Length: 159
Image 1 (tube, helix red, strand yellow):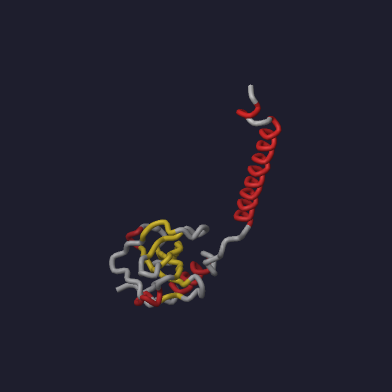
Image 2 (cartoon, rainbow, N blue to C red; image 1 turned 90 degrees about the vertical axis):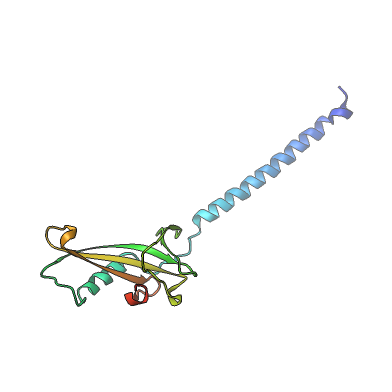
């Protein structure tokens, strides 16, 4: 075996040491970036929690002109986070990651320009009698701005 063809054993050992140090450094940098990404808080896009718009919608239902609390005394409410893009397309959004999950298709839903590129809570309140069936219930829908908590009048987004 000639040392000229295979290189000296010292040269091989130093190449291995240098490669090991470089790979260790790259791994250390990658681990540092991963830890930084996991520990850095994400930007909070939603200023108000889900409970606040539900409470606002429930109090608003009591003031509705066609609300008859003697006929339909019980209420239930649910809320979803809605992202309206800058072209007026609406998506139901994941509340923790703010990823758009699915397209909202509602016949007659039109989003005017002043409501675009924003996040909203859509709150659905249903009033019902003691039986709780859909034959004796009435639904109310509210669109609430996540930044201000303002209830958007339904005549702005529904025909």
